[in-house]
Length: 118
Length: 106
Image 1 (cartoon, rainbow over the protein chains, first blue to last red):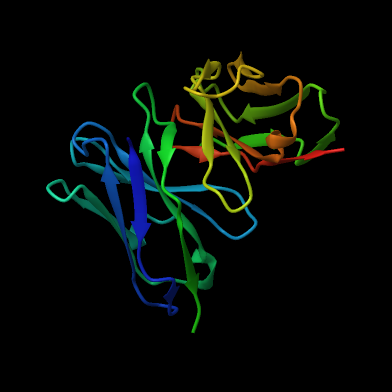
Image 2 (cartoon, rainbow over the protein chains, first blue to last red):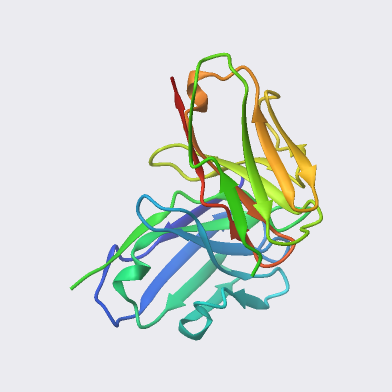
């Protein structure tokens, strides 16, 4: 069955770089795009960016200058790197799979809580 | 970016009632609209895609409708397990979400 699982540090210091990994199973990264979505505590959802099945990427325009998404298809892993972290980046970070008929999200990981604090 | 305005922010209804949540897009999104349910401490779960298509395994008491810039999610015969937050998301352009509706039982 389709599964996605995020991993990474729970605590990052301000101005440092966040590195997260999404490990997927049950589908191929060359068939479906994988997106990152984040949710500050008690707040709504924000699309962060995506890596498409062909390997190209797109980013939220508000985060683009700090963000990089890449993948290793042999390991079924997608990577997110975000630099110059601030307290406003504190959130649960989810990786998600896009659906077959559009860029809605039909499977989600459990999420990883990232706190930006010294 | 396409802005999604979702209403109401919170909703209280009795078991068995029908509730409706609405989303308005800042421009025509041509039915590129999904609805999600999120229970406390859990990931969002897809309910509806393409404005009115029910995702696999979702109870038929959930339905979606709308076109252009106006969309709605209807829940018939409200059950206790429907207590959750609900979000809309457009994907005609880069994805953006509504601010959410918190549904409680009266």
